[in-house]
Image (cartoon, rainbow, N blue to C red; front, side, top):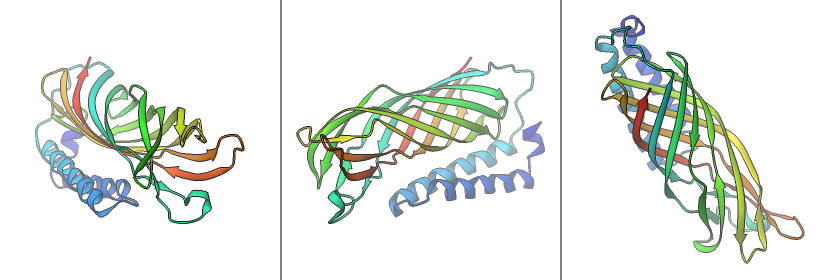
Length: 245
């Protein structure tokens, strides 16, 4: 079994690699405070991974469905980088609010270690601010599709990493008295690290962190002239429950 094959020093070695890769991948261009938070999450996941690798494996005859769903509460934390408005002055003057959102994830296990996850939520409405003052709103729907690797698919602690694509649909922009508009679509990469904790045969607790790249041009309605470019690039910090059919 995978768990047995990775027990002892070999398991600890691979868990350490998981921690290093998790930290390096997820903290690129990250502020010191967020880097500390993500580092703590990576170390906690690594500690749980080492513990799981040291524990006896779950019996192989405990059959599980290929399908799993998770319901999470997710904090959407924007990076809020932007080009100078009109090409002059300071950067990062445009910002979008952080908020809590519901998240529904549908996962299909292709093989025990490999899964595809579709990340869904309901349409979200966000505030747009310039130098801290609200100047408008827009709506968006940001589904992601991720390919995951599950390190210990039959363990009590089940850490995983994922990578894929985010496609965000943007509409309803009403900014600066409807004088400014946004792109309709944003397509960018998405990264993920998380862990399931098995409570019963079918029920799990879950923690999850995702980094998603979302950006849009800001342009003048009527002329179409580009005014700025906003890189939201949010972090999604999630916790919830999962059910494996």
